[in-house]
Amino acid sequence: MSRNKLLLVILGSSLLAGCAADYLHNYDTMTLASGDSLKANELLQTVDPYNPASNNTKIEGDGARSVGAVQRYRIPPAPPPTTNMTVNVGPAGASTQ
Image (cartoon, rainbow, N blue to C red; front, top):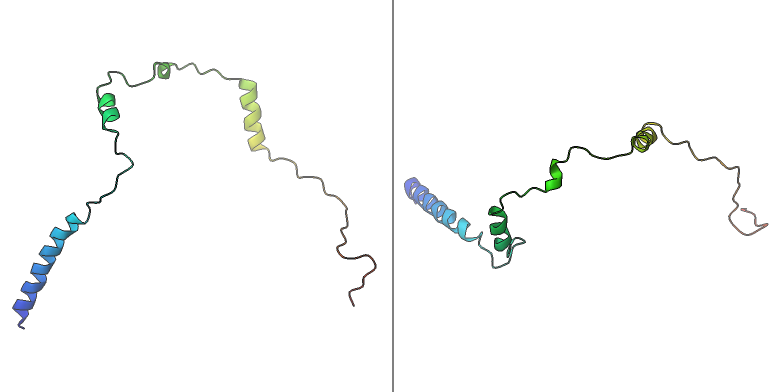
């Protein structure tokens, strides 16, 4: 086979493979967003979709409680107390010889 024919065959097969790639993206399954078209259309026609309370810039909070929380994060907690306890595992009076 000559070089030109081989090049023509490779070019033709690559063009056909490109057409088949789009067909492979079609699935017979349902997606997670299926059935949401009614809700999407309702949201598109909503005049003011924001919550009216989102315009409130006065956020209530306890300042002393907030300061205490920040200080707990900044200062690491004290380590737990150590105990002087000995644990023996095995039967009483058994030797390891």
